[in-house]
Image (cartoon, rainbow, N blue to C red; front, side):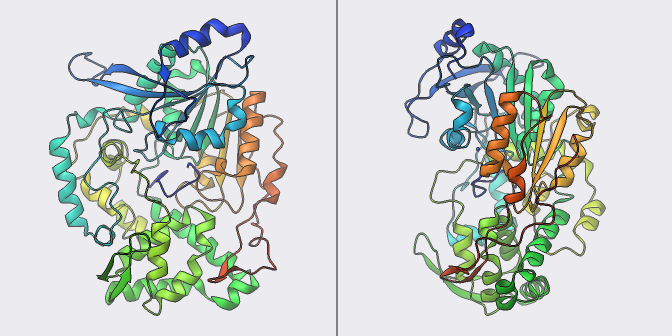
Length: 503
């Protein structure tokens, strides 16, 4: 899923002297944060909005706001608004990570994080066991998960048809106005790029610059292309292993072996004794192709995790799934969950599902390794989830001259460069930068961070220094439990490592 917690990259301003009054008024509406999950120097607050913005009656939502104030006394008047992924991530809970990724940006500008309606602390649509990583939850059937979703749906204090992206972006502009900012810079990662594009369409006059990192446009039709895109990512992984002497010697024919493994687990799933790598829980569990597919697809989001995949495939061929479960446990780390599944379904079921027919989905998954299993629960849940309405114009390409930086990771399994290329075509003042050897949300790399900082400083994509792109490559593969070959510093350079798309 876009921007999930295991995707760590996200993963991801006292204002200028000439705007001192504006800065004071913005922070005067907030107070120093006191929660353990926010930086001690941040400011927190909320803004009340109607759940039904059209009628302006009935239930109201307190939108949770966190501001990381700029460090310089002569800082700029235009902050950076961070739009989280998912859909379903709360932005405010990412404040510590965002401050690290954008630390140089914060020297000159406020960074504003708003929990989108239905996420974080803004009337969150969380669900049962969102943070459960027990062995039982890993093996939970789709039928059991769907029953839990129905229980959650019945208990929400919310009209689930009113949690779509266009409504939420009007909320966001209310926050901008409430804090007293005239122009803002926008960063969107993963699903946050969809949100940023919608905000660009609805409130483009308020945007100075926009960064779209791992593009998931409104017409993406999740999960129609997800099987194709995850297949591409695994084929690139297999190719890079084959071109690396050490990996090819240790794990030859990786793609064919994965096909054979998935086929065997579909036909004859074994029951094996495993130990949870974090809790020590031991149990006999049945490992089927669905479990393997979900773990491998999760790993494909981050190249560092993919360095372990060849070894995991080799172990699984011998019915040793302990390393597979260890890989699955890397993402959560025991942190509190930050993915509101109810909000995720309200977005996907309203914006994506209506444009997918069963025949479309069947054709889209044919001949792919993981197509039967990716996002299968979301597809089934949309059959009963309340569905909001979006205008037909929602799916039209966003046309704009706003200075825009589009970033893509070349081996991204969910938002590969093709989506960035598509969106950049109708953004006349944009530049698309593809970072080779990089997975989901390329802005999490050191190279991506440097490019983003320069872009925000300059306010234009025209003359960006993107020379660092050519130096980025996939991390070296693990050839044994001791790690990668010590004689290598990284995997093979990507053929498109230095490619930069046209403005």
